Each structure stands twice: as C-alpha cells, then as structure tokens.
Amino acid sequence: MSIDFKDNPPKGLIWFHRDLRVNDHAGMNLVLESGGRWIALALSPRNPLSPAGCFERECLDDLEASLKLLEIPLLRLESTEVESFIRNVFHANPDLALLTSRRFNSRDQKLLDSCTSVLPKKQITLYDHGTLYLESDLPFSLDGLPATFSPFQRKIRAAKTQIVPPISGFSLPEISTNGIAPVELQDRSFRFRGGERNAILRLRDYFWESRAVMHYHETRNGLLARDDSSKLSPYLAQGCISARQVHAEILRLQDQIGPSKGAEALLYELEWRDYFKFLALRSGDRLFSAQGLRNEERESSPDQKQFERWCAGETGNDFIDANMRELKVSGWMSNRGRQNVASFLARIMKLPWLWGASWFEENLSDFDVETNQGNWMYLAGVGTDPRDRIFNPDLQAENYDGDGAYRKRWSS
Ligand SMILES: Cc1cc2nc3c(=O)[nH]c(=O)nc-3n(C[C@H](O)[C@H](O)[C@H](O)COP(=O)(O)OP(=O)(O)OC[C@H]3O[C@@H](n4cnc5c(N)ncnc54)[C@H](O)[C@@H]3O)c2cc1C
Image (cartoon, rainbow, N blue to C red):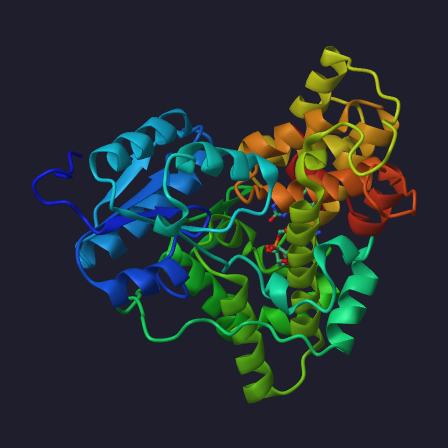
C-alpha cells in the first residue's frame, strides 16, 4: 500500500502494539478527538503459516476492516523494517505525531526506543491501557512490588485500588456470528478465530450464552472442553479485547445475577496477568536471562536432541507428550498442561528454561511476553517465589486425566 506523506501529510501515526481493537482504546480516542488524517501501523505475524500466525493475521484483518470504516489505512510491517520506516517518515515529516501504547518488557521497549530515538519527546504519546490497574494507582512503588502474587493482591484489595473502567463512547457496528463460533473444537484441536469481533463474541458466549463463567472455579483445570476455561487468552494477548472490558463484564454479571465464585476466580487470574506485567516492568532484561530473578543460574544441560524430543512430544511420558502435541498442532495448551511441561523441561529434563519459553513463543496463539516469561521463571525455579515446586506428571495425569481421555485424544 502506498501512502502519500508528501502532498497530503497525515496528522500522525498510530502504532498498534498488542492492542488490536478500536473499542476501549486510548489511542483511538485521541485519534477520533483530534480528527484529520491518520495512518495506522502494526507488525506482521512472524510465522503466517502456523496456527498462531493465522490467528494474528485474522486479528489484523479485522482491525483493518474496522479502521477502514474510519478511513484509516493500516500498514503491516516486518519487525526488521519498522525502525527504518518510522525514521524515514519522520525525517520527511518532522511535525507528525506518534501514538502508541506503553511497553511492559525491555525487549519491546528497546525496539520502540530504537524507532523513536530521533523523534522529539513531545511528539510521542504513550498510553497505558494494557492492565486492569494503573501503575500510578498501586499502593506501592515498582521497587516495592511484592515478591509474590498473594501479597500483591492483598495490598491492592486492602488499599481498595480501583480497576480502570473501559473507555465508553465508541462501538463497533453490530456484530453477527453468521453461525460461526469464535472458538470451537474442530476434530481434536481448538480453533480460535481472530479479531475484535470474535473476542466480543467469545465474551458473550462464555458469560451470557453458556454462562460457563459461573462454574469457572470448578472447571478451570479441565483439559478437554472448550468452556472449561474462558479461552480469552489469545484475544487478550493480541489486545482484541482489554482486561478492563472483561472486568466490566464480570461486574455486569454480578449486578444482574449476583455474586459468582466463577467470576471472582476469573478476576483473580486477570490480576495474575497484571502482576506479571508489573514484574516485567521492574525486572528489565532479567526477564530474558537464564538466572531469571535469582542471583545464580540453576544447573542445566543444553542437550539439543533432548530438547527436540520435548518439542515433538516424544519424551516417553504420555501426559507430557500429549500436551506438547496439542501445542504443535493447534497453537494451544491448557494451563495445567503448561505447568507440567514447563516443570518437566526445566526440573526433570534439566534443559535451559529459556529454550522452552522460546518454543512457547513460537507456537502459542496467546503468546504474551510478560505472562510467558513470568510463568516460566516461576516453574523453572528462577522467579521470586521461594516455593520450589516440581510437578509429578504421572500424579498430575491421574488427578486431571484419570480416565485417560485427554491422552487418548493426543496419543499420536
Ligand atoms: C509455562 C507457562 C507459560 C504461559 N504462557 C502464557 C502466555 O504466553 N500467554 C498467556 O496468555 N498465558 C500464558 N500462561 C498462562 C495460562 O496458562 C493461560 O493464560 C491460560 O491457560 C489461557 O487460557 P484461558 O484464556 O482459558 O484462561 P482462563 O483460565 O480463563 O483465565 C483468564 C485469563 O487470565 C489470565 N491468566 C490465566 N492464567 C494465568 C497465569 N498463570 N498467569 C497470568 N495470567 C493468567 C489470561 O489472560 C487468561 O486469558 C502460561 C502459563 C504457564 C504455566
């Protein structure tokens, strides 16, 4: 797509970064308030042929369709070309504005810094809409972030810290399903359909059609059924829906139906997500280092062959292998599965945990840097949590797949 920057210069660029939606979007609000011509940009999926890449492409297609209604073109750039693109555009049009969301981890921050180092600070607007709570509202500074989740949550609750409500005032045109579910079990894999419209549909289905959210606290460890858990993570990871929008739906449910243990438990998980984002902000590059948040690295043996067996689901442990096959084929794995395969790689096979985290990054449709690295560090025993837990996959299989149905589904 060619954009005329010279004779018809736009007001600025809006860079969508893991916030691929138009509702509850602080940047879109600024664009609509300011009027004038804007250009949107986003990074292209890394591997368009994988289930994760296919999901990401659908998210971008949906965003593009929404932006088209507002006459905002969307440019898709490779991560290797974004820096030169931004530099060139601003070199030719020094007065443009750049809008984009705050980054929570040092890797994304470095890319943003390298793209914007030549721009005057006043032209860059960063908005903060990736978490339930704002950092500035927390009852402690980032340096005083509790070392584990429970005291983090206790302190927030004690201080009555408010979750930011979604921005109102803009809504997508009527969404219709055409009879196609946003998330469904096809053959043996969960198929996630990307985009903001599908995210809203999934929220509706889970909260209002099936009302499965009411039983979330009892079903969340299930391995087989679509509604065992919310299946919102791919949408939250790409930002097709915000955690604040999900929270608003929790409030609406409680308002209309009354207190719900399931909805409370879902909020608890969304707070975990916040915790890992704040932890990433505080931890900088340590999030990507072998020693993690500890002072010393744990012993590991970088055995490539063993790692390949883990990736391919050929370790010889049927529960681990079933989960790894599911990930490869579908881009999805349950939370129970993730805990087990991560612990197995880092603590039983004693392989470098960063290898496992990268494999997840390559394959998960819901890959989210802060949540992924945070969970991996915890399971590899290099996070801040003093508990040193190793999962026994045979016991776990007995408890969560007693009849073997899950292992049978993914037996080859
Ligand atoms: C080793 C490992 C790696 C992980 N990597 C990712 C990742 O890259 N992206 C990701 O979104 N989740 C990750 N998780 C967390 C969790 O497994 C998924 O969020 C969850 O399985 C997604 O399914 P759901 O949307 O049905 O979640 P639900 O159980 O319905 O939870 C609702 C939402 O809460 C958040 N959430 C749930 N569990 C966690 C958790 N343990 N930590 C932080 N937030 C959580 C997610 O945004 C999720 O969508 C990882 C967990 C482990 C153990």
